[in-house]
Length: 465
Image (cartoon, rainbow, N blue to C red; front, top):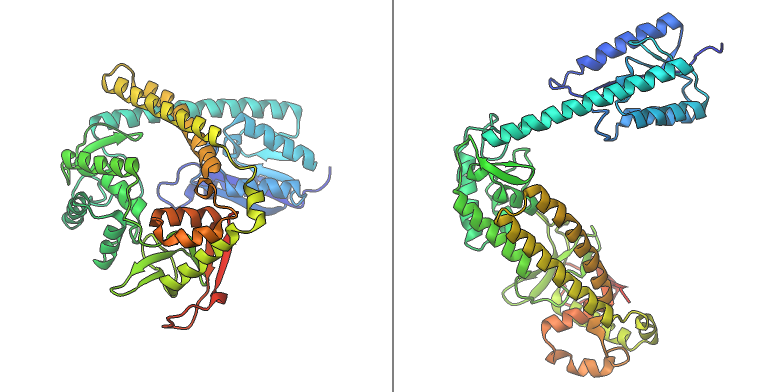
């Protein structure tokens, strides 16, 4: 038998609540002892601490070990028990295929005393992996039942990070943070945007529980949560009153949800004042440029802070930039290549079909909501029926966007000169639609500080068509 010169030792534990890695340390000690007994030289120890082998999530150390085995860097494997290696039969088969392809014949376990390099050992390993998978499934069912029972009783769900507004016990209200939440709810219901509220939190020095700046998605999740209204949620649905005190009333939460739903439904935004909004990028950091009006001028700027993430070091006066890019768009409309590009992209009939389909899908969703409200179907039936409809709507919206992207250009290719004469008479939304149909974005490079004129060499256009 050839001598083992580069054995791999693998150790894993699913849950390390204390964070001290004591479980894997014990496994490693026993694996080292077995290596000494059989005379194998350990080349590397691969450790996945606090990671499940049943969930199917990626285990970095395990994947690295498989790679090293496949590359011929390891010639044997030692593990404490087969259920430390995997708790899923399909994963065991993948492991066996990897070691077979690599010519590794020596796989030993401290507990179980079997060798996967033999037929009988592999059979025992498969049986034990199946047993481990069944145990994990049973444990998972028990845990889900426990979570459902806790939710029905209003007991808080655990976690490593406390919720904003409450102490670590998840029951006791923190007065200072509760006051912030009440202010946020009142100001949001009064019409302030999530973005402006994030800016206010930053100005006030209020951070999240992890010490980070607030961003709109995080703030939206806080304001729409049932927790701050004293409601227990489970799998995204309110299941009843909670055992902790509310910070805002359930009625205020309903009003918050109604405003959020109305914003999604209507798509209303601040009235457009800039024809290039959303189409400009900073040449220093690549971030978006945002409209920033002054008393006597309009500007596009790269902004720092919540929801922006720019460098804050680029500003350009709006008017000369807009004149430059609008003229470039009009000239491109007169170019022969644009008409050729658009020739095969008209899809009026398809767009009408997709629009009708979307309307029908929305009618189905509304009908499902009515049935659920009347308790004619359960929450599970409602979710099962809703999901395929929403997937179908997303696909139709994607196709509709592709089919109608150039509708703003109907009749315009070859007529740039005529359009130039009519440009000032068009509404700002119409101008923006024409520009966005031709221009994907433009990159603006830094220029001389305080300059009122624009050097055209600072601007690089990236065309859509």
